[in-house]
Image 1 (tube, each protein chain N blue to C red):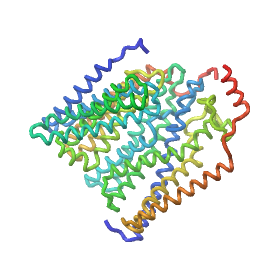
Image 2 (cartoon, chains in turn cyan, blue):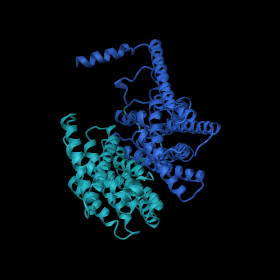
Image 3 (cartoon, rainbow over the protein chains, first blue to last red):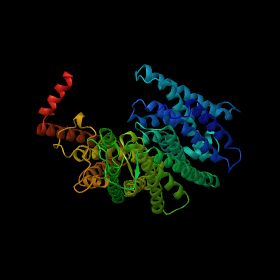
Image 4 (cartoon, rainbow over the protein chains, first blue to last red):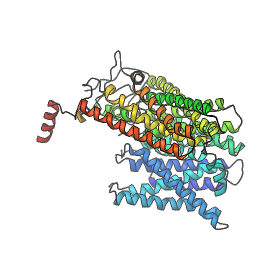
Length: 263
Length: 305
């Protein structure tokens, strides 16, 4: 559909990287009000990754879409934990953690993309670039939502407040669903970027709401803010998604018989 | 917590019962929305000019979608338990939140998939959306409740070293995998292609040409649940129930010892032999796939062109 104006992948990548990093870095500043910004940054990364999943999965990876989301989170979590952990070895370098994680994730994504392209020979032109983007976005999603639950991105703190109580599994699994669901749910020949991005915002906001519930346990007030903001954002994005569905569908009917076709 | 043998056997029986219910309801829930295996034909149908009134619930594969609802239920239950809620209420609220979120994912996938089939003129039926989604939520609520309850029992009573969300996620993935491999088989071919000879195999030419009319009126997803509740659902329930029972039984009787591991290996070996015997029996009874006459002709025609 070349006649429809789409947001370019580069702009969305910038939106995801800058939004994600700003959210993560600002979140520890003024508790209990700012940790929720980590989740907002993660939503930016979710929107970016949904577009990256869309571009790579358009090459007919029907059943592969969920796998892409899972591998994104797999690469993301390894890189995120490596990035946050390695900086603890250098005093004063804690602030570099998320950036190191982002770079590590990009490298892992690049290597896996290169292998898929040149060793497994999947012959998907955008494979290397999209794998890099998906892994990088995955690491930002993991760190962003973890920060919303832990309050900051110190490794020991994340271990205590996100790993030990099992919240990390929700970050991983629901975050992966947030990334893969938009394209998976809009799969089809008449898929449109605008509808997909609104759905990405909606799934990201659902994840944010769940993180809010978890953060009530770990942070208290901050969790309530994240939960309420997540629900409000979800309502907005979900409504926008439905507006696009009404616009894009062949027909939205209350009920009725099947229209006559040649079959 | 250390329990005596009678009590641990009672808990094992309870877990087996919960797993059986969860497995059964999981398969039926996936059939309400034609998820997973039958979904590909539902997705393909409009392309073949077979417009339909069947819910297209594409929340990824069953293991991932059920993992989603189980882990969500586990997290919410953990938070409530941490706030000193009564365990049963915590699990119920957790399962409810999980099921509602699952329902939201279901609505977006139905609406999104249909809106992406505009060129085939597939309409989005809002009455299907309205009365099928609550059914999906209800089924998933029971599944999430059973799985989080199993995770709670394992964590609190049996003293597993893993957290409730972790155990719930593992059970969610398991129930999805078992529902996908055991239950799905009994919806795809039999229901979507029931106007063909039973067991005829799916010819490529038939792809997407699903049955769209019911015994009375147009077929919808609720009709498919009714069909699957006869065999597919219970079979899945027994599948998961046996999995839970046989994986926990050795450690319940022998404790965490090498004897228990030996018994576990013996159980696996017995099942491998039994499966092999069933395979032989089926092959002897039905033989290899037979091509129909007109099918051979169709292949021949395709080759000449």
